[in-house]
Length: 221
Image 1: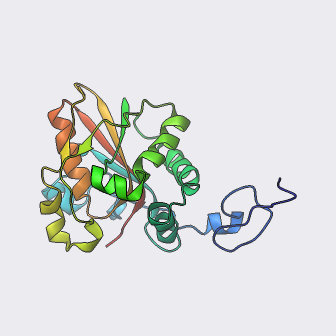
Image 2: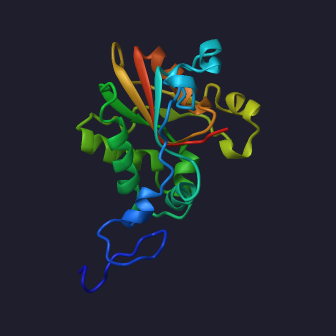
């Protein structure tokens, strides 16, 4: 099949690669490296906790991102979410799995839930598709329905930053017994972290004692 229908790189169109991206395009992705705040994954001096997290720490204990939400990664994620390019989920999920494999190992993995109306509209939950890959590669228990979104919220991308926290307040539910567990929440993009924070608060009420936020991409200020 490779000889008859050779793969083409999604970004540059080069033929002959067995992967979604050719080696050159893969290497040029905006990898999220350097000294980062361990709580919010934003750049910080010497990798210390940033001032914002010291003053107002999020409900999750740490955040880890594989890439920055910049071109061309932003285009790839939009292809996955809005144009149903589910073939991208294994590649992006694998990169996140590599990034978090040396992090503290959680007991369970919970994907960021979609509201039922949004799920019907889109047809799939991109966070769940990514979580399936990460759970499979790291041999982690996946609670696919571990949390729910009980209130439809407007897309975060269309809201001012100060309004995002209000929009997701009380938006999540969880019926799982997470007593004494370390839970990793998985999402595609972290911008302000308000959705992850609100979901972490919900999981804490169910007994979670440690919460990690794992995301494919981190938006920088």
